[in-house]
Length: 122
Figure 1 (cartoon, rainbow, N blue to C red):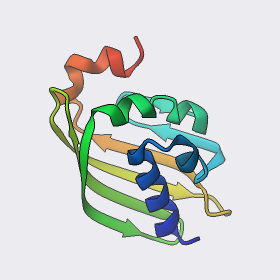
Figure 2 (cartoon, rainbow, N blue to C red):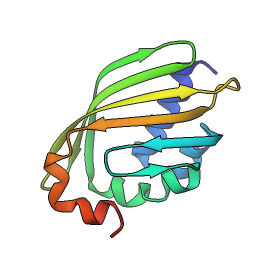
Figure 3 (cartoon, rainbow, N blue to C red):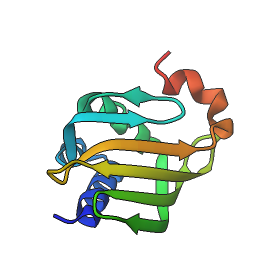
């Protein structure tokens, strides 16, 4: 599988809410970082997915950049929350087996501050 197939396979599965299909693209060990959440295992990372996709009303891809073992996606996530539409950048790194072993999610947290406690599970 190419980097593009792996990353888009993960991305598309995630936004469909398909935890099993998204997890199939993730490696062990694994790490995820976003402004609100950090996780060191695929199960922990995907645990909140069903709740998240319930508020997503659409995703518009802006840019896809692929290298041999890394990729960056830039997209708008439309949500049914006070945050509205969120411009998002996501950087992926793949291990030697072609699985995603690191994801860094970047977005402006200001629109989400009123919901931060819910996002962080507090």
